[in-house]
Length: 309
Image 1 (cartoon, one colour):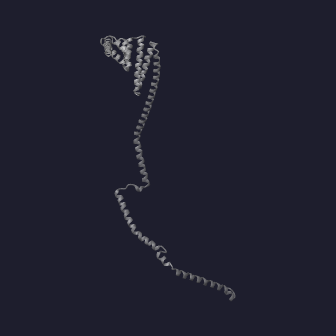
Image 2 (tube, rainbow, N blue to C red):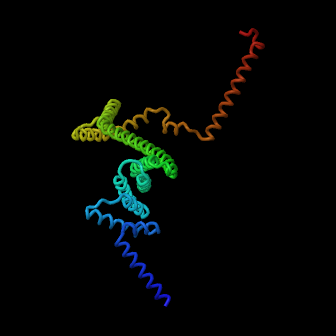
Image 3 (tube, rainbow, N blue to C red):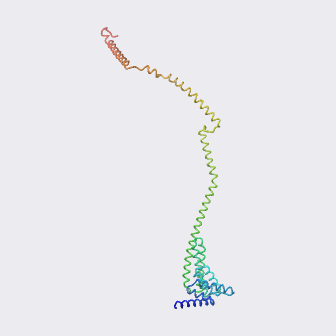
């Protein structure tokens, strides 16, 4: 019974909500937004705004503000930005709480867009900086319209810090780009110079090779190239001359051996045996002794004959 009663109450509540949504979609969307059901509220508010415009009626700025707030809570920053801009335009000029709140919402949507662009990397840095600057300006205008919105002061300070950070990163990026372009220009200049100098260097190498050849020819003139017939003739002449010289050399050597004194045969004739050497020595000793006897006899002769002459 309890389950059945609860189910009946739930169906009744749903039917009442559906009837309320059908009767007052704007009010039901706001109530759902206050309860934290942003997606359902966004769907109802979009349908209500579309139906109102289809009938040619003017959409109240409060509804456009609620639509932007629902889109912002659902994470649809671009949709929220468009809705807040329409709310500002519908609110008209002058100061007012609704314009200030719409400006606050516009700054928040732009801040979200800046964060998304920053996450895209260096390519989205410029977009992020533009979005953050636009958010700061929107918050400043909202604070001027309603100075009681104190939280906007913190938002403005945070935006200023973010702008300085993004500008610093952009300067570093530009510096890197300039350095890369400078390096690229240097490489292109070196490549172009090498291409221009290549013919001149090849010509210099050719001149050096020719100069070396000329020096070698001056030092060794015999190394000059000769015709094939001339080389063959020279080779044949060298062979013939070497053959003739080979025939003469033995005769010349034989004549030279004949002229040499004390040749092999004479040396063999002059050689003596040990017995012959002994006889020669004895003979020399005998001659020496005979010589001494004669000298002694000559010294003793004046004593026997008188005078020594």
